Length: 203
Image 1 (cartoon, rainbow, N blue to C red):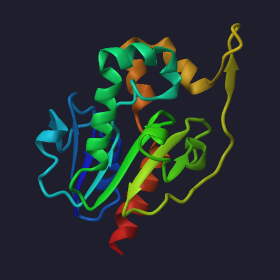
Image 2 (image 1 turned 180 degrees about the vertical axis):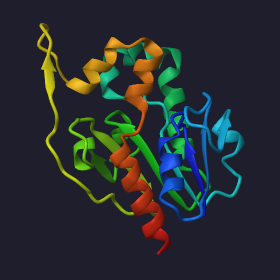
Image 3 (image 1 turned 30 degrees about the horizontal axis):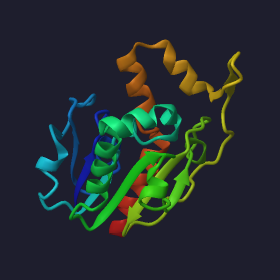
Image 4 (image 1 turned 45 degrees about the vertical axis):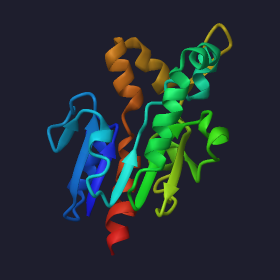
């Protein structure tokens, strides 16, 4: 099975598939270098999208799509950034690949495209943390929860804004590290993807 992990710099999902076996030819792709050495194409995913992949798990940028940034939507619509985000998301959805999963936080694609097949949380997969994550699926099953735990701690700011603690704590890092922490797939979710979409799909 030839698998593409699109828009992944961390290497987490790629290496989890590799570690759990199955004999995959698996590559990650991102404009940034991979954090974990391995098969990684650094560049535009559209350069390799037609290379005969059997499955793709894609994590397109959510900066211009997620409802958490709604206060900036008007300006992003005016300058074209939001439309660029929409177009790229749809390129992932419509890629010529038999099995596709596209991940994004809760955002505008639920109304512009369609509602996701599934919304998962890290606490469904053994992490005491909250981060609602949408999955749009093509020829792949819903992910079964593997280890449901507590939702994790939350913090409330003087403004009244409430935020999950792991996300708030990441703000203590510099911008690059903060972005990497927030955008890296939780290991429990990666394990479920590799087991349920990889090993189980081959059996």
